[in-house]
Image (cartoon, rainbow, N blue to C red):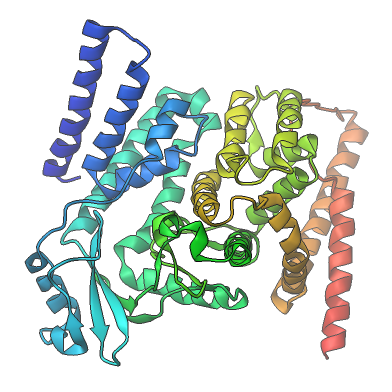
Length: 494
């Protein structure tokens, strides 16, 4: 890590520690102290820049790590900074678009950026075809700073992991940071963000009220795209759009999020109100696709199972699925966690957005799972942040919507697409390979058991806290069923 950056980080954190020490010595720990401490932490993260801001936003959905008071303050983190003069960005444009970059636009408003953040500034332009657009320009040398911060935090996480192994066994900070790094990297390379936008434009085709800006040109440090019309969802007054249209937009936004989690397995990781614009015709445009979450197939399916149990008001089923999403440690109390979830689910199942903060409630499951010694998949951190952001945005439009109702409305369609994918040629081949591996494993285990019995060394080991696993006979049955379906599908297509 660069020495200058290390000194900068150490200086900000040192000042924070000195302030806390002074408060403790001179004023004690009164009722105001937690709120003052939370504000100071939030300001320090904003001062340190984009990576620390994203980290704070993610921590705002982790009640198992930080206090409720800290969460309330971290939710106010804003990635807005004082704008730099355009002269600082002109060399970036010349380097990426060429010295004649001005010829690529009819007009370029260099006087006032329409957006300022710690990673980039955004300027309004008129494209060559006369349509309105924007140009997003990365701040000079900001990528190097963010990569340095990532390396520093990774080292700190490993030190914490070694010093607190029991805590690290339940909350794997290093893995959690890894998920955050993967989600943030496209923000450092606008060609990756452009690829995300093209993928997202395909995903919104099925939603009549949603849109994503079109990419005009993209380089590593410059992104040219069409303008998102309208204003932020937080600025749309209730009387500006009919109630039915507002509800339709809110439903489509939530449905897009569910499809991103469970079908496309790619979702907008930062859909806060400032990244969703609504025009007078009732069309919502999602911008800023630099931070995108991705989830593997098994994790996606297990999360769907969690929501299915939630929609059915089944706390014990939710607890089992959540445990399988991660794993139970040696000291886990799985029955107590199931009791916790049985008490929680009735509060969520039928509540609307106006009655319940679903995103925070979902991630609050972490508080109980961590307390009971159950480690959760690290992708939940980014997924929880994304869901909490989207929920907050939809609340401005249609607070009467129930997330579980929208999920159940979309369920049949999502399951149909997943079934179609499962019967594809590639997945049929994978099923057959898995079936052969299970058969080989069963053969080897049968030989091993036979040998143990003949030597009278066969014993049982029971772990009451271990999560339930699918019996091999059931897996074999499922594999045979999958193979049969794949064979029927292949024969029909021939």
